Structures are given as C-alpha cells and as structure tokens.
Image (cartoon, rainbow, N blue to C red; front, side, top):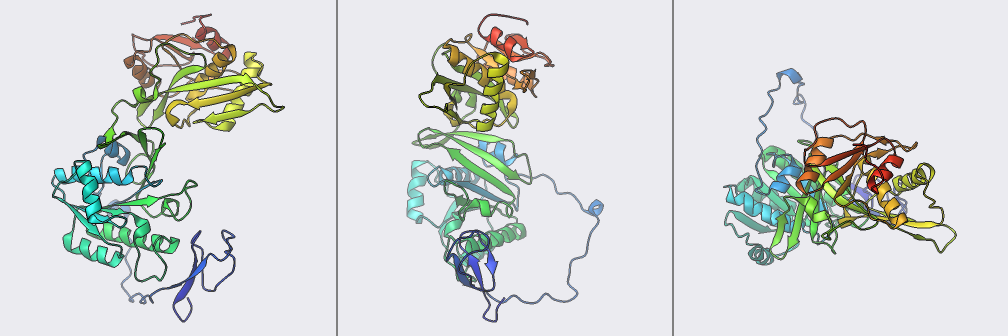
Length: 453
C-alpha cells in the first residue's frame, strides 16, 4: 500500500496493484485500473490471537433451519435457511429474482419472522406496488431504500431481523472505498462485510446479483467463493417456467433444482415438473423420445426431439440444444458405425423440449433412438421411455436409480421402457420392461421389431 493509502483495482477482473498500469496483467484490458482510496487498517493487538481447539471438543450445532414457506426454494436450500448464512441468488436481469425473494419474504413473515428487505434499485413505493400485485403485503416485512453499506449495517444492528434481503449487491457501496457502486472492488468489499454481519448477528442474509449473458462481469461469478450458498435462477423469456439451480451449498446438496411457473400473480411452484416438459400432443411423432433424468433426488421426464435432413453444404451441420455437443457427435459416430445408419451427408439437430439442460449419460439411448426415428421418418412405439448410457462399442450400460425413474414414468402413464439388460432392482408392475444389450437390440425393440423382456 502506498503512503496515500491508495491501491489500483481492475474494474473488469478485480486485479489489485499498488501502482497504475495502462493494461491489466490479469485480464489484458486497457485502462481498466481505477485508483481506490482505502482506510488505514489498525495493527492487530498483541497477545489476542485465537487459540486452536480440537475438533473433537467442538460441540456441533443443531441443524436448525428456517423454512421459507416455498417448498421448491427449501428443496434447493437443503431444507431451509441456515441462521447466519449468506445466500447469493444470481441470474439475468428480469428473470424473477426479486419476485421470488419478495414472495419468500412474505411467507417468512407469515411464519412469525421479521424480514428486512433492502432495496437499492427501487423506491419503497415501487416495491410496495409490486407486493400488492403479488399479494405479498405482510406487515412483518420492512422495507429500506438504502445504498450505503454502513447505514444498512447500523439498521441491521438495531433492528436485528432474522432474515435480510439485499436487492441488489450491485447497488450497494461502502464509504471506505472510493470506487463506484457495481465495481468489482465494491461488490467484494460489501459481500465480505455482509458475510461478517451474518455470522456475528445470526441473521440469514440473501443477496441478489445480476449477471450478464457470459456470467462473468462483476457479478456472482466473482463472489461464489465468498458466500455459503449460490443459487442461479434460470429460464427463457419465451417460456413461462423458471429453474432455480444450486451450484454451491455448504449446508446441503448441490444437485437439487426448483421449478416455478411465472404468472401474472408471481411465481407458482410446479409440483410435477415432468408434465411441464413433456409435449401435450397425443401419440408419438418421428424423432421424439422421452427419457427420465435425475435432478438431485427428483426424477424428471423430458422429451428429446431430433431432426435429420439432407445437407445442402459440404460439411453437414450438427446442433445440440440442451445436450453437450461433443456427446452428440460421439453418439452419432456410434450410431453410424454400430447401428448402420448413414449420417455422413445429413444435418442432425437435437433439442431437449423446454430448454432443460441434460448433463448425465442416462439420456444417451433416448438421443440415439430419437435420431434413428428422425432418420427413418418412423414413429416409435407410443408411451415409450428409453434409459441407458451408450458406450463406444454400441453397448448399453446401466444407469443409477432405475427404480425411481421407472416409477415416475409409470405414474405419468408410460407403458413400455427400454433399459440395459444388466439393470437390477424392483420395477413397477404397470410398466413393461424391454432389455437391450446394445443399440441394435434397442432399435429393434423401439420400432416394434423385437421384444426380449
């Protein structure tokens, strides 16, 4: 630190140096370093350092969680809010973060907990107007229009609410720094101070962070290592559903998702998301196959659609929406080599209905059958489910939690399921099981040419 107590921080990546540079050594951006004046820090007192404690002597805290009143949100949080935790909810502007938190604040207030809702982007009148539209006007929700972190800290210290909502972190600034609100230095400093406030007061603090489309510019990506829990609100403006996905959770699983439906009256919980992502048409169409993917502890039935058409260019196109592109290329190579389908001169497009992202290999067989159905322009058996990981030699490997996936499919009326032949476990009685060792057997069974159950 210089004698003037100033440092230079990059507004793009947060790189810190004691002298000005024309170009940031970290992100290579020109003229991105800004001079920040910081307050001098007092030297630590001698002889007051903490003493190490044996982990066996530490008394474990009871898992006391505060339910938000929204089951889908509690599922993603791992059962509710942990006292003294700092939760970051990120997403693109306008996706519904403020709506979700205002509804959660209203539900928390209904259970007897006072909630402090700090708004930095809107006035209290504007928030109240939105609350009236959402029917979320519980008197135990207190609004505070403030940008200064010092004033917010003083209000929390005197009011001592169990839950604090900061909307959003990009609008909060600390007077100890000379940078503008929204810069990397301000966001990091304010988040660190809020973390300390949460730990000292025991209040659960939820902060909203906006991200750009690349998700990297002065947004939650710079804060993920600082907070206890990171939730991302995902969705397409052209669809009514929203997905709340957990990517970090120090107090629970990171595999859960919450599904909501955006309506004029706010966000509604979707108790059976499988019906939301399945097409409403009767019967099966060429290129359409349903698979059951696992999102945490919840089975989710999704429809995979494929389109195969003659290519008008020298290099055929391969497009995947909701699937990994490299995985699709691998499956197409296996289908051509082991399944006998000639796809060299064909354009192949694969889409997961509803914009769901599938990251597990259990959907491999459904992708293969969808492409084969589209290539032959022939529908598969109606109410058919396909599950299995496809190997390079064309074999179909077992998937985890098969029984749970099949029970979800049987509940929604599916009558036949093609699964790997080495699958084990109990299966529902009202669904017909067809086993296949390789993709050749699976193709025969799917198109009605074989049955080896």
